Amino acid sequence: MDLELRDALVLVTGGSKGIGLACAEVALAEGARVALVSRSQDHLDAAAERLGAGERVRTFAADLTDPQQALDVVARVEAEAGPVDVLVCSAGAARRTPYPELDAAAWSGAMQAKFFTYVHVIDPVVKAMAARGRGSIVNVIGFGGKLANPTHLAGGAANAALMLATAGLANAYGPQGVRVNAVNPAGTLTERLGEGIKAAARLEGISEDEALARQTAGAPLGRLAEPREVAETVMYLASARASYVNGSIVSMDGGAAPIVV
Image 1 (cartoon, rainbow, N blue to C red):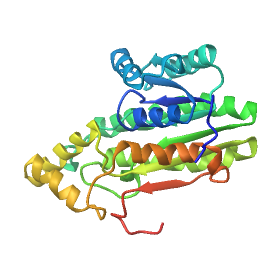
Image 2 (cartoon, rainbow, N blue to C red; image 1 turned 60 degrees about the vertical axis):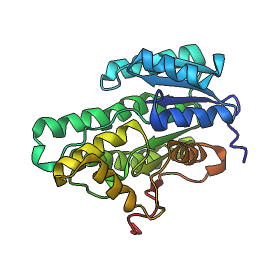
Image 3 (spheres, helix red, strand yellow; image 1 turned 135 degrees about the vertical axis):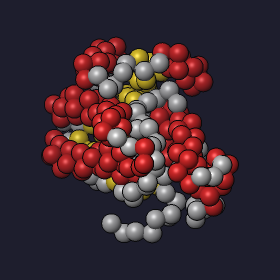
């Protein structure tokens, strides 16, 4: 299926690893140009080498918890690569913390790590897209915002806030030609999965191997998701093939939570 992304500029935050990097791979396969943002230039360099797409990939290091750095990096992207056609937000992850270990700092840190790393970039990009009358944003959030998990309450709260922001921005900016959607992955085989496994093992008093086995056994499809599977859904939502999908939150838990809301 042609996603009509050829020569479009796709800005991916958190693009040096995991789902963000997989989104970059899918976008490049569709003929898009990609701008990757991450805190670590070393990680960005490694990602660019892996992608092997030459001048079609540009990298930008920034700490998106800092609103000024976020504004600056968006300005740099547009100055060096042109207007952003698609924004994929995948930067930042709240630390997995079993509920007995939570304190005020952990709750605040979760919002900084997950919610604000998204909003600091979305705000300038969505306004620029609206001024041009076109654009698409997809937020990679997480199923913890929909189904509370005792090892991820603070991060789940940040995810829930992003779900609300996604729906609200879609409604506000749809009339100006900008679509905003989200994908909520559950367990996905990335480096971040290990932190969740460690937190579950501590809470339940079991080994990490047992925690992983239990999570995998609870997946109706018999396995956890691959980053590429999430990325293909993200890029579909970002594309013209999903031109009437706006304000949607797509769950990708493999059917583990059989709910309809």
